[in-house]
Length: 356
Image (cartoon, rainbow, N blue to C red; front, side, top):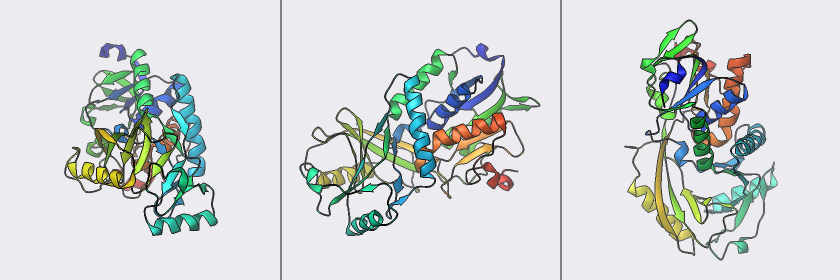
């Protein structure tokens, strides 16, 4: 797109159009602000490998995730609203069917079911025996939702392109000029610039003092013709409806990795696990990979730079991006426009010293 559209003063330059950048531009639009989204489509993005699942409980002990009572209803409404704007159904409520992988996990479920239970439900293992091995029984997590991230991100990108609010380019923080009334980049003036470019921010001179701890996520897109696609299945791996008879299949993520390429070890591990779990045939269609900008304390980085007040960040969502992104993107825009404080556990304030 011709950059000369942007000689006027804009309110925001938003860097990145993954999950967070999409939500930042959504809320900037809602606030009636002018902006351009600058996105380098050649970087391996975390959003492209995300399963799109918001699961209210987590981990081996099946505990509720951080602030889920706030994030879950907020996310449900936000994704439904953006879907309506795009004329797409991108949100499905889909229970997580737990196929207990170990006696320990089975016991955790039983314990949690009888103590402080909000989301867990018993189900009948016989319902799944036609297509899965369930020697240790099953359980269920309700109120989990699945987002069709692919449709959402490509649909929103098209909307930005149609309104001339999108540039497919790499923005290097070194090329920014900071002046009294904001920033300038390649002739585009803006009051503020917000970085939501995933691992790109780790090399950004303004934010490299943050405690990023990137992790590598991989997933296979697998055709499983006879598997009902109304639920998410979780064993040692997760099997998530993708589209038609295709499923997203992935497991944990790696903190130690050598490169951002798909690893054959991962593929072999998943194929072996699938063959052990499923009684029905499957075919691997695609192998996805992305690097997530997680951090050591598993809380996002949200706020404006303590010295350069026109430069902000919304990043570090880690593996919980789907549930955190709408809430914290809105929080950052509200902070910029109205001075609303950002939740202290996510606020950039906590890293003030390392950013000076």
